[in-house]
Amino acid sequence: MKYINHVGDQKPSPIAVNYGWVTFILFLSISLLIPWWLNDRSSSISKSWAKNTLKIPISIKDKGIFSDLDQRVEVSIPTWLPPNELRLRSWRDSNQQPMVGLFYREALLTLLPTGQGSISPKVLDLIIALNPKLAEGAPHPLPKSYLGQHDHDHDGIFDPLDIHLGSVKTAINGAQYQEGYEHIKYPLGDVSREIGVCTDVVVRAFRNAGWDLQELLYKDMKARPKAYGLRGKRPNRHIDHRRVRRLIVYFKKYYKSLPIIFDPKQSGDEAWLPGDLVFMDTLNKGRSTHVGLVSDKLGWDGKPLIINNWTYGYQTSEMSLSDLADYLYRFRITFPK
Image (cartoon, rainbow, N blue to C red; front, side, top):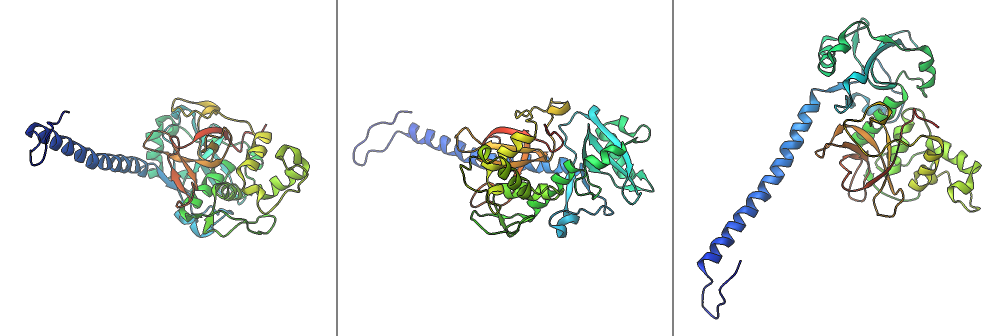
């Protein structure tokens, strides 16, 4: 756009003024429409999941963290999973009560409310919407061997779901991001629930399923100090499990690394599941500097949200991080080496 040169009181060209107003109006319109579009898109996503949300049956007592939040926890069935790999399975808990759960392959996604051992009509409608074949016949019995292998704290909630429930509770709790060294008890130590960093989200979520990463890492660091770069120093049970660079050493040693590129067409073991652990590089250092857990919802970018505590000024929540961090590793508690 060219403007007529002017001196003193000479006015600019009327054409230039008109173009200026057009540009201003376009800029204003876009500025107003983008937030509206994003809000509308987020609202649509929320509404789509509202029909896909279930509470854990009240008869199930989670032994994990923040028990005061148990009745506020809801889980959504991930919409990106291939329906043909979803399974309904039944078993009896330690009190011989009939249980029914929705599984993706071997991972429990949610426990289903039942009445007299059968799925309630409302939940059945949801199941039919996912895959009509799921409603055909009785749920397949779960092998007894599974019960002893995948319920670390013996509360009737299998580990993949138990970890996910723990991460959901950390998001509801909403701890403010705050770094700092604190003396905490051992084992099962924690800083105040009102504060935390990214690793505290993971420690708390795993503790919800009975896995104490504080104790596990401390013992492993004592056994393999060189692997953790301790260089003659003793492991510190107050802080080392709260450091990303320590956690990644442990998980790389004992768990299989899963694909880090999300594709909704993924199936089998490659598919992303709620409760999966994701290590990220947020500082372009080529190494893990941040960690979080996969949510059961997709963000506006079509990729799973990550439950994490991002940095100063944030609190534990579900966030879209695919544009803010490079994903480096993904692990699942049911895939040890």
